Image (cartoon, rainbow, N blue to C red):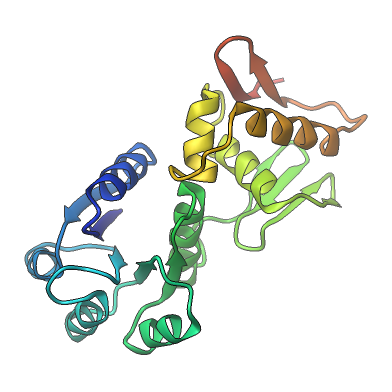
Length: 225
């Protein structure tokens, strides 16, 4: 899937691009609205992440120009949370709207949600031996029983199940789930995983677990048995 990121903040653009590439997306970057429109005309993309506050033509005008060319999904990004900006962004053709700061997991969740609306067959709930995780509804069930979790607990678990048997450091989980602007410490990750384990306890035999690798981090371990 090919993404175009139009964002003038170099640090945010670079980190977001790196994360999305690690998630398997093909990413092209633009630092201005003019550059973004030019790239959009020359190359095919599946979705655009578009900042509002850009040098030169702003994100609203860029969105208008892109809508004249295509109906592909556009997610607008801004530091403002006022309803006026959200309404204007949606009115000029944006499909969704994110307010900074946001976690990497929120970005991927919104991308998946938009693509599901386009192709409902994609991104169905993930299932592992009794565990079902629905990213569209933010719901978790275990052997048919609904499990109440917080938004961040959900995002931690969903990040794990997207990458079974892959080891993640606490630093990676902080960046991916809480975002690069979060200034908490590793104990935040530990406490969320502890609560997830407690909520996912069952007497049933499982072939998966959230495993601690001492001194390194955590992984969602899945076995064949």
